[in-house]
Image 1: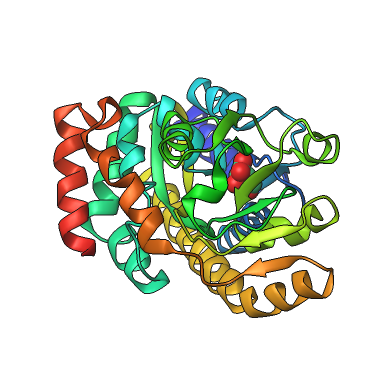
Image 2: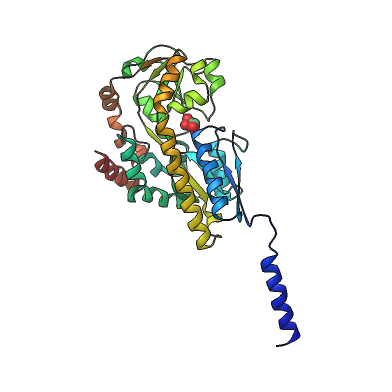
Length: 326
Ligand code: EAX
């Protein structure tokens, strides 16, 4: 063996064992909400699991509380790979890929178990796969939960009670259409919206119970109606551009740990709902627990025939999903 070759082997061995302590893969992960939120619980659990499973080779830095922009802006940064991952509510995805409207179709999912079965199964996989055309690697679904309505004007039991109510909705064509067809006056706005509610720029909003508690919306909203009108998942995504640079083992590890974090968070969220309702009552919210859901459902029935579902692949998946969730 030549001296030179020996030297190369020696140097190579040295390099292998003297790897710097810094992580090999840095992941910047964006969520729009604050610590204690559903999205942050997924993010923190994922960080814990993936850093441990990779022995520190992967490091996750979480950006929360709008520190890198609203949800649409985070998604744009993920497309460009300036941010590698995000835990983002499905609503604002619908301008990037209309197929996401299928999972946000009102009254589609009846139970948490059904949502899990569909979203973790082949239909959910179709949606995750479709996101590649917009530059996202869809990894899995965690949850915001079933959305309920709050407002500060009067109790709401039927769609007739919505007339004239100014409701903040997510930046989503579908969510705006839902509240328009129900007879309210919807305004899309990015999250958060406490000040707008406080100042009366809007009368109400719709979100799962954890949001009303964590963001203290009970301070500025008197009436809560358990409409459960939309099951609202988060889509846990990576930048497709970035994803393509990873080796198979790293991809597996990320895929496995993000899913574990998602399942952990879904259960965590569901286990707290009864206590949240009691808490909101104790804070003086007036709660309509049994609104006329059939009337709400009848009002939104025409949505499936509207333009926002007209693209053939979107329409086809909508029908498939409706049949699977009957
Ligand atoms: O979790 O903008 C919204 O209403 C979303 O639900 C937000 O991510 C809060």
